[in-house]
Length: 264
Image 1: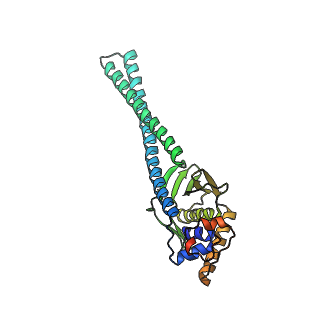
Image 2: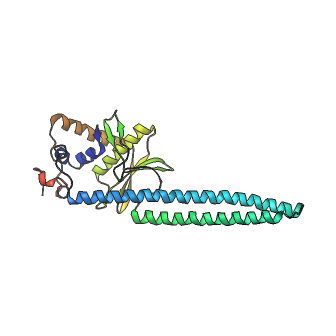
Image 3: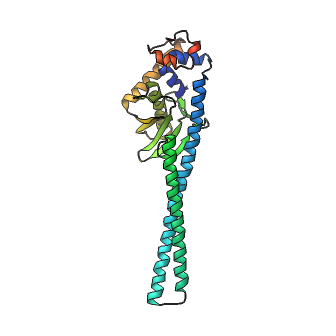
């Protein structure tokens, strides 16, 4: 199996991937900081999901109780106007109590919604129902034997468009998503398709300064197949050289100090 992380490494720089397979430690200061930010984002994501459920539960119970209160009110009016008895005060009191309870639960639900919106805004979280999360490193590994792929998406959301994988990235926010990140997300799109039985429409790259949508279309699928074919060839030959001329990429590489092909 080739992991989605390996695909990201290889597309970023094949020699980086090669050094990783040689056991070179990637945990530079930047990497440690990024891992800590991932864990924090994971904690915020789970907390946001709890708040979202509180909001939904509060609204649901509010409307349920309101429906009962409306029934009690109707019964009270029927008793008063059609066959007045001493029990109409009990019915009316019950209706008022239920309306008050409904209003209280509605307030709780609206407060949860306010807290959810604030948390999403502060943490840069993507809206949606959280199905699975691996930002803390404890998610389920997905496998696709047909493509020889494995991986754990940072998060999987259920939206009106179906299941959507989310890959969270720390550091700078580019004008366009980095190709290595796109290919890593493409791995998760393929894995969800293979394990879930339905083809996702798209995935999301969540950078600190914005979110990019990556369509799971034939073009993206073809690019992923090409990347995997290159990895298989490198595994066969036992060699993978740098394939770019970008000093900035070398400057940001966590394995730069071991690299004999670095530009800076």
